[in-house]
Every structure is written in C-alpha cells, then in structure tokens.
Length: 195
Image (cartoon, rainbow, N blue to C red; front, side, top):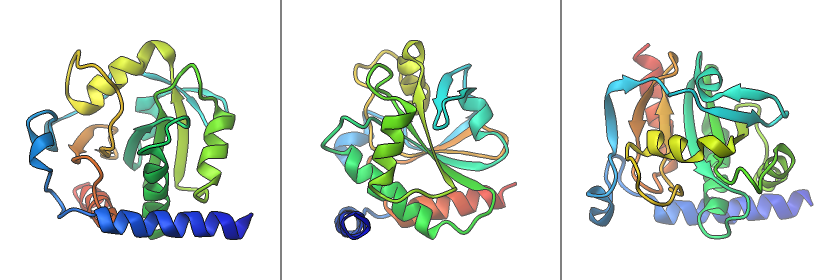
C-alpha cells in the first residue's frame, strides 16, 4: 500500500510540475472571471462553520488564526482536479519549512464528505502534521466560496485556486487556478516575513 501511495503521489507531483505556471501569472481566460493577487485591504473571514478532521465544530477564523495558512476548496468525490489538488498540497507540505505555517483542505461537499472521507482522501497523498482537513457546514458552502473567490452569486463553488491567510487570520492573497508548488511556498514565506 505504501508503494502504491508513493507512486501515485510521485506521478501526481510530476504532472503538477508539467502544469506549473510562472508565479503570479494567470491564464488570460481566467483573469477576467476571478480576482487574483494581493487582497487590499486584507479580509477577516465572516462567521463560517467547519467540521474539523477530528470531528469538532470550528470556525474558519479559528482555524487560520495564529498561523500563515494556505487554503484550498475541494471535495473527495471529485475525480478531475481534486486528486491533483491533493497531490499539490502533499508536495507543498513536503517542502514546508515554516513552523508557523499550515495547509487546510476544505470540502465544499457538505452532504457527501465527513471527517472520515476527508482522512481517507488525504491518506492517498500522505498525511502531514501541517496539513489539516475540514468540511464546510451545509449552510455556509456558498458564502465560503464567495468570500474565498472574491465573487458574489456566481454559480459553482469549485476552483483550483489557493487562498493565503496571514497570522491574524486575514485573507491576503488569491492565486490563479493551479498555481505552482514553488509559488505557494514563496507566498507562505513572504506572508510569514511580513509579520
């Protein structure tokens, strides 16, 4: 089982490397549809409820406060981009050298995902102490997606963007879809250095 997981992870990381984009760039087709880059002013999240990987009811603000955090939206039943997103966060976790940084995968399938399904999904890529999982509350899925993506009322909550929060729990950066591992790593370091 360990060899299979390692091979899956290795293949996914190699595929990610082939998809890597120049840090800070976004394909033109996406640029008009979603805000990307530095968020000014930085935004504290609204009250958004999550179920953490250990089954506790928590808030997004509580999870991201105190650590520089990279967040992705996904769901375990997705067979297109979410496996790549899992391999992506596993690769970022492998390179993460900041003691006060963390990664958070949030499922937007509030009716289908549970802490158990999230744990099983994450295990395919290799768990890390710095990589947390949670499931959005069913009533908060759309508000979560709108806040993260910086849009309101657009249909669909799925995105391959990464959202970076500072230590004060404020959203400070939105990447374009499918950023490079090195881009997210550099963003976490830069936000950590900003204090």
